[in-house]
Length: 173
Image 1: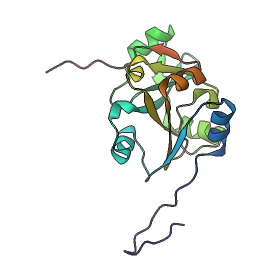
Image 2: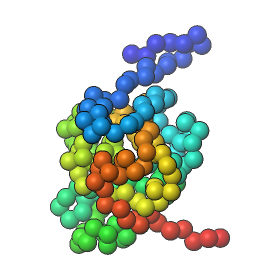
Image 3: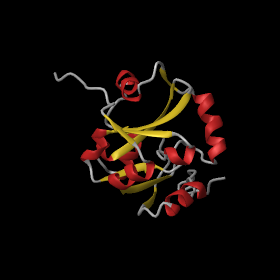
């Protein structure tokens, strides 16, 4: 149920970041800032809402690499190159995880949306080197109305992430 504002529109009630995410970050003793915002579903929307550059927002994707699930984080301004990721992970097969499978994973981690925290989901984490070009990163925090801001270096250390050049390169016009 959403309250109505003075113009009779439904207004979403901001929810705090999921307790599992908050506990994970606090246990790691890493500084982070919780940011509540309107409902967003993509890295692009998050950047627009927070008035940040796309390369400051980390988007998280889950891939299946051979038989294991891997969480991939790259700047929202970039696309994932599955060929580069396959080579970086030294696997035989790689594919994006279907939405139905994602739903089951999210229920297990008690979050409504995927987070960039692979350790929370018990996944290996791979971070695109392009994310290192910014000091702070904005990451979805497990729901659609809250994000976390933290130092990129802290995020990489927390996740014990493998760094690789996995973003697609675009040809210059």
